[in-house]
Structures are given as C-alpha cells and as structure tokens.
Length: 103
Image (cartoon, one colour):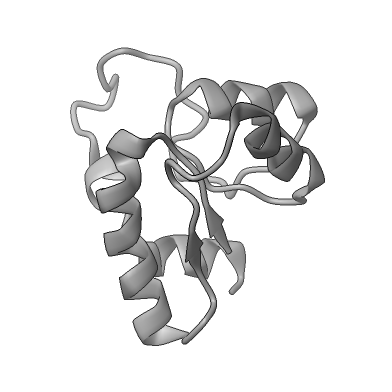
C-alpha cells in the first residue's frame, strides 16, 4: 500500500503508515511529499483500487476510472452532510480502510 499526498500531509500519512505496519509489517509506505506530480499520477494510473481523500488526486483517480472502496453513503459530493453527520470521514480508520480493501 502506498500513501500519496503533499508534504503538508506527510505527518498524517506517517501516522497511518505506522498503524498499518503495526498490524501488517511492511505493508504500507508513506510517499507523501516525496513524489513529483507526474510520479503520483503514474502510481494512480497503475493501481486497481484506491482509498483517497477529497483532493486533486481523487479527481484524477475518478477520471482514470480507478475503483474506490464503497462507503455506506458514498460517493457524496455535498459540502455538508445531507444525513446530518460526517461519520464516513470521522470514523474512517486505517483498519477500516484495510478491511474495505480486503487487505
């Protein structure tokens, strides 16, 4: 599993990588802030399944037709939750993502 993102997101991605690697050693590598845009796009293009936050890279993945693990209320393109909560964001842990990815 590769984690992409900007340098601003590197610390958060490292926290995620550490949690994932605690459960499954060597499974996750943090590349946030370490890839040029072209490399990140190539990685997304080559992947079969992606778990990604709402970002420019998410839109690239969607445009390339890369599958994303379904959430109960996704995809959602609303600025505020029509269900009155944001559990899909706040309750989403690395372990939950791994489970949805079948890892």
